Image (cartoon, rainbow, N blue to C red; front, side, top):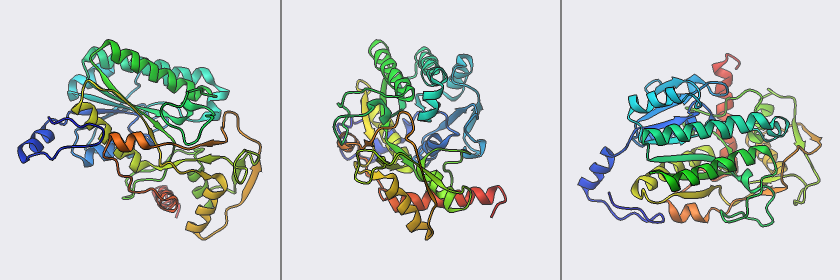
Amino acid sequence: MPSRQFGVMAALPINANRRRMEDKCPVLVTGGAGYIGSHAVLALRDAGWPVAVIDNLVTGFRFAVPEDIAFYEGDIADQALLTRIIAEQKIGAVMHFAGSVVVPESVENPLEYYHNNTAKSRDLIEAVVKAGVRHMIFSSTAATYGTPDVSPVSEDTPRHPINPYGWSKLMTEQMLADTAAAHDLNYCTLRYFNVAGSDPQGRSGQSTAGATHLIKVAVEAALGKRDSVGIFGTDYDTPDGTGVRDYIHVSDLAAAHVLALEALIAQPDRSLTMNCGYGRGFSVMEVLDAVDRVTNRKITRVKAPRRAGDPDSLISDPSRIKTTLPWQPQHADLDAIVAHALAWERKLGEMSGNT
């Protein structure tokens, strides 16, 4: 198979294209019934990859996984189950999304996060190595950078997490690096910035009740599912005093995972670490203004104290992913992200019988 180097792929002859399709190994997606994982499943399936999903359905939803996808209800700490899945499905790569993701919750209950995100990831990595799986993509986070002294943030920015969520992910990054140095495994760590939106075709979206993602909360408020939106901190060192984040559409993020998998397979002696963001930040107020625009209504805003572990601003430098992969974001527009999130929220209402 021709190698891909820093996002440049030589034109493939027809027979090489056919070989490339045949070489698409089955992919196990952990947490594939969750928000981001379910979009990765759709992106893989759309691109012709065989897919299997493991999810314990604690925060995921069975309806988020298409019926034609092999689904296993279980926990990634169950090595016997993982070994069976890998053998049954002939898994050649793993995309790892399973874990806990709420920053304030991690501050309140750090041991749960170190157990769920770090200890269980260690069990998963061990099962992957023992089974001879060659490639792994890890769902990491910009929270590993903590409160950086520079903005935008590159992959070389020092990593100093300020909450257990960030530390739990950073520890897993280190485990992957150490394991890849000792075993026949290459990996890609993708550090997400703020993921939002939903599948433009309406096949999946953020479905978790009580979710804390700002755009999810805001569209719920716009549809009357919440009375108001809390603004946690108005005294940050930002232009309008509210926190600034780099919002990335979940479908663009899912596409990056598929391209990263192709890159790992094309160059099995190389591992990758890349930021996933657009390189543009929006404040809480700017996001709420966008929701007001898209919905043509005014959300009630309630000022509240800062939450523990939230930095002032977190914006990505996406240069590396754009030079390493042929990644071309299709939904890098805040109003479009909001519109897709709103459409999914309305669909959830229809699914539950609330129109």
